[in-house]
Length: 298
Length: 318
Image (cartoon, rainbow over all chains, first blue to last red; front, side, top):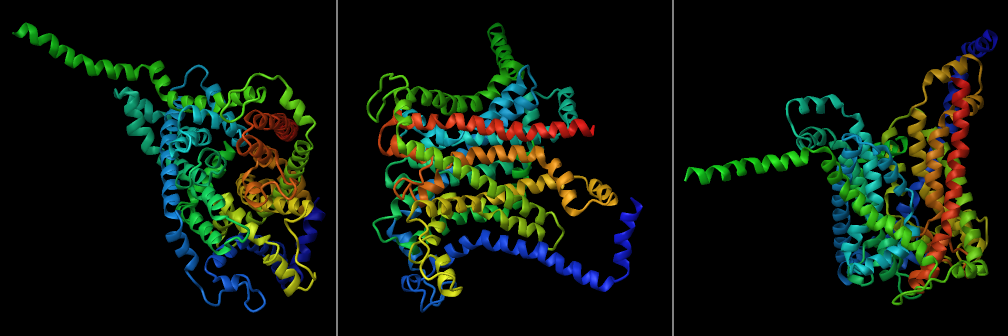
């Protein structure tokens, strides 16, 4: 045992220079090179999307005379076309409305549910928590056909309100789960003190638990916003008229026309549609990472 | 005069306290707190789930109430080569994409677990594919896979001179299938890597120190410490990943819509084509319901298959 441990140490001490250089090179080959490849591949589609949106059509279709990785004469024509010749601003507005509406709704519902499950412990509360967790495992692809008939029954077909009501089905389980974790981390003694001082349960929730759970609420909020901004299948199935579509659906169904695709406009639309979540994301990176990892660890 | 005012005053004083007391009454408060979440989930999740199973046994079309037809839809599906095709591709898609995502994602997580400058910035950048709406990045892939102006073809033909003709990514079945799988792996790597990185960071460094003192090689440290310690989190992330890869819809719908010649239909896109676009709600629901056994099996397999080993590990260690 001691031999094997001592041997590498001895080797390392005799030729220090070559080892240092060797480990530096090794580090480069084993860590930085693969990492660089990963970053390059993961980001390339975005670079390609961005560069296509500012390229004039002549450059887009001619790789022989123009280097495709760069723009010689950038143009705003595609974005101008999108903003003034299509209903793009309207789609952005609808998407924003739906995302904010469903996020608010599911935040309220899941805060109350998480509080009831975690703090107002009652017989069977773990089972309610498990039931809500299982709801997260039901994928939208199984639900969209019967949900379409439900939406029609409620007279909500082709209305953004349908999306605001339906999105919580995948937002509430996630948020409840995340918030249960957050409420767990708040010491129960604080609430006991308040109870002894004669505060009611609702006062405790409003004055003590909620202010302490603000980071959790922000995580759940931005996550829900992103998920509802990105949602596709429900929006595709429940919205018919061009004006009420959300950005992801509208770009695919309204901008893809005919046989010749307007790649400049399509990529500009994708870029603009990704920007709100990308900006949101850059402001709250840590919350995203913590909620993503927290949700998995729970 | 005073006789008439007193009761009203008392009533006025009692009323708020009655309300407050009601809201402080625990069973009532529990019901009130759970009502919005449970209500939303019951109306828009549990009810449609049951309704979907019921629809699968009827011949409902858009605009017409169906009648119960028993297993007719499923019998028809079993004779439908398109359904078998979709089952086949769904399984292949899930298997290869999950394997790719986890192999590459685990590698990326191990790389990110090292110390180097700008680590948090890099971690933030890597999550981008997961944050951006899938359909929009799928459109970027569609453009990357363009038959004429594909940037990959340009690189292979004009820059590297490895090929003489452009790659036909989406024009024939197998290349189209693998192109979609590649796009799915691209989108899935960040989620897997960041979740697994969180797991890696919980492994105590003292375990590695002990193993190093015992003379374990890098591979042995990975095989006997990292891998077993990661089992529980791998089980959870893989369960999620399998469920959402098997039921994937967006990527396929955005890039190929099931083509060429229906070779890239997943069960979800086939269900959409038949159920919503074709109007055969009953048949579409049957296709959607036919996903459930696969999902249950995959979940049980990945969860118990991986978790059991963790228990064994825990037992032998404790």
